[in-house]
Length: 408
Image 1 (cartoon, rainbow, N blue to C red):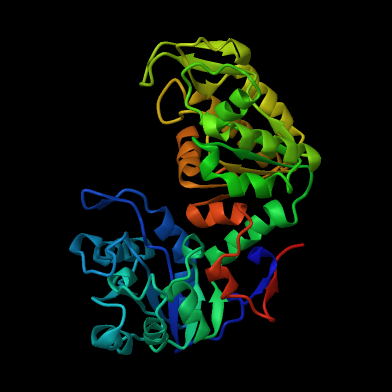
Image 2 (cartoon, rainbow, N blue to C red):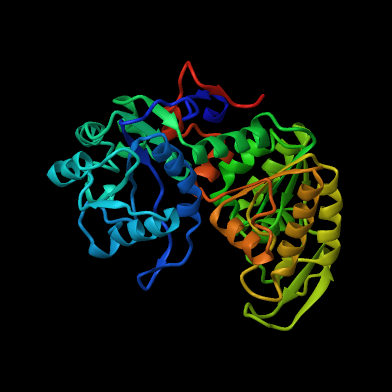
């Protein structure tokens, strides 16, 4: 994987008086015109502050939403720029385009230590097409390129891959932290190492499962995905969500895991209900006693206790996906209970815990432990593709013969 290569960081970057194009991920969640989560902005600010403190003229570039090469007013980065200024605690300049006269004028007006945000790169169709002309135009605005957007690293776009071909390229602090955390989790982990993989469908995580069974000692399968594994073993799962056409695949993954010395752990009891709604009447049953008219909606207490014991024997854990329908009570108990057990082991210093993926981050926040894992990635698709063992274009573009070598 790309995460095992070496990269230039900003440790010794001489950027005083120089223009630094900083690829960020400002694609924050917005509801009714209000930003609902500042996490990505907050995680970006250490890199911006460090560059600004070194006297760089920081030019922040990012995509936002999916305007598909058109100017969509509600997908402007202008409100996000205001939020960034608030978090940083000082003014942030603005340009209504990411290239062309407006961008050039805004960059020319920058002074040492000042910060500028350019408009949404996806207003230009050349961004997602990785158009060389757009890459060159972006590069012409700066002297140095710093990529701090691991969450966009799985896309070969003009601002993530193309521009790195024209400027000295460095990893920002957030990118560096992501790469180090992921390398220590699966590339060079302290063993034994385990993984929690949950979610609705095996079909969406085939590559992930195929890659991870060769890298971990224990694989905990949760969510509706576990139902498919159970059904493939002949266990009745009632009306539970499962993929009947994936039974052969589940059996093949199980055989592959056994051949590689990886134990797959499935639920031994379950919380079931006849309705999928908050507060629906529920009961806990052994996994081989699911009523034919019921649905499995969470891992049962015996399962969670067993998994907590298994995790306590590990030294490294990677988590992607919940154990049940954590969004609504009472089906959030299994995921939250195991998450708190992992957080406690992490705090004790016996476990390195790395989690990522949209549902996973939401579940950990719901459990109140998102800040208590060793590392929680907000990268989403990039985190998933990394788990699948894929080379990420934005990371590959940063590879260098010189730079830090990630921990081995």
